[in-house]
Image (cartoon, rainbow, N blue to C red; front, side):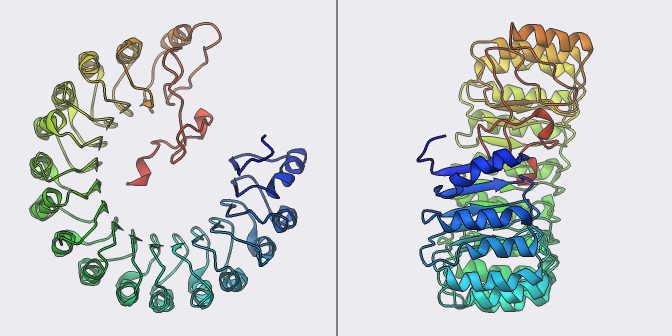
Length: 502
């Protein structure tokens, strides 16, 4: 390792005593220290504290998914009390921190004026812990800009002090409280506090928080008062057609800087899809839209596709997983794939498109003008027959980088045709070909090993990512959010990246 290494980044690794002894000197000089899921416990926190006290260059500390506990976190925080500490980002996500440890953390907020980001998700802080945090958050010396509190066992009672604290925080930009049962009362308290705050809020994540259509009035007040808000994440709330329709006029406001909209599993149907389509047509700033888990049906898909063909729509990523679509809507999507010059990613998994529907998609994808880079067709009732359409598509389309055909009825014949596609010099599927839950015979597996050539062969377990079976196509798997980071095949989730936008 370089003597002047600016970052120590280790993930999902068990650190032996010898390896730990090697790393400690690095903790004294690295600008960023990330030791995620490394089996650290309270015992190592004394070493970490001593090392960090000697590191005036530290700006980021991430100890996510280690069993530090309140005592361990306390010891680490002691190292950050120095007046020379200039830390900007701090993460104790999933570190077994409870309300008892929040008192010390609150004091840290008072003594670290440089701290901008605090990640505490997946800790059972509860309302009592949040109350203590808010006391430190309110201190004039605290200039926190981003706070993550997902899965922290919060209720509406905890939202009262947090909402009040925002009123005194002009620097605040990002709040995540998803997956807490804060219900409508908590929504109201947070929204009122943010509305009254002078802050330029950019990201608000309130997924799975118990909101209903009645909560949309509070959300509208945020959208109306915060033109800076570019990412409202509202998925898995019972907003319904009425609630989404109420939000759309505020999303359409000329001053709105909307870029990303997540309203997956919100009870939206084709009935009110027209309201959302008006946003698509008018907001060229909107780049990502997740409508996964809403029963849009083929009629909703048709309305969306008409909007995607309008010149004012510049959407780049569209997620329509589990939207009750059939092959009947694929002719509309085919036109979009052939003509739209902005759409780069379509996630349409878990819809009953069938071979005929996917065949139509391939016709659009095969047009020379298609710019699509990622297409996700897992669990779409596709059989081996569709694989015959893909070679012609690949020869015509030079943009596609990612293709998912997981959990479809493919066998040896289909996998063989996919291998032929990868052998073509024009094929640019350089990121990943995903074939989870596709089962092939032992003979097929042996052929893939032989295709890899001397020194390249390896047995690919059934149901895993089909990778590295051609020497010219090293499709190395990556962890979500970590491009280029290799990991063992068995460490990947069932559908990589899908859970980011549900």
